[in-house]
Amino acid sequence: MNQADVSKLMSQLRIAVRPTKRNLKNPDGPEGRLLKLRKTVTALVKHERIELYYNRADEARGYAELLISNAIRHGDRHKATMELADYWLLEKQLVHKLFKVLVPRYENSNVSYTRMFKAPRDYPGMYYRKSVLELRGNPYPVLTPDNSQNRNLLHNVLLDEARKEFRREKLANLANKLAAETENATASTTATPAQAPVTETQTEQSKQAEEAPKA
Image 1: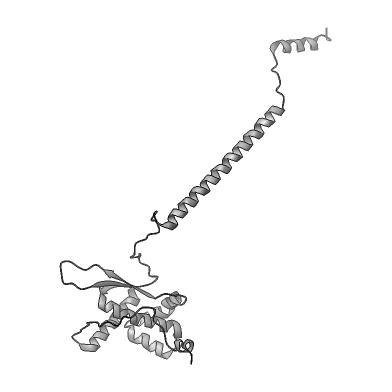
Image 2: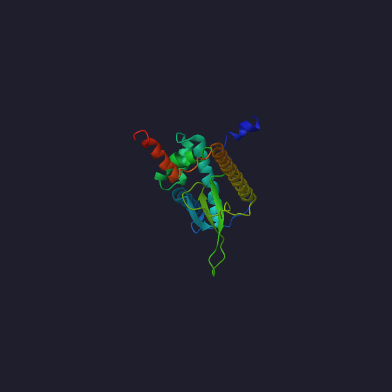
């Protein structure tokens, strides 16, 4: 079996999983830790953006990516995938959202399904790294700054120069059109001879010429 066929046997994570030790502890032991991760994945699917500690967000992100990847790969008729969704989603109505909302959203996506950002910590207080974990395409405002309106970026500078050149060409064409219309109007006025104004004397002479035969 070649490498291409092997890659089809399992879902591939689209995030980098670093081999670092996570110091995650829970008074209830491993079961309590898994329950907290299940609650995190459930909250992520439900709210699509959550704020929590960095270590727990980093670990729960991998399980959320795997859940969505399997849902896209196998669909809702696959027994193992349905058991996986039933385990990680504590609120069972979210299983419908997983297959009917998230799968159509990400089925043609080429990037990861989640994003994680560092969040500011509370000061003063104990130093615990916080983060924001969210699903891509959520209805909330973006957290990263929008640099599309920065006029100093190269593509914005090029667009401004293109707009200026377009306006110059448009104004030049308009000026040429007005000049041509003015020349045509002047030429037509010159070709038609101007009629001399009729004076009162000429009017009286014409009346006398009309009355003469009657006398």
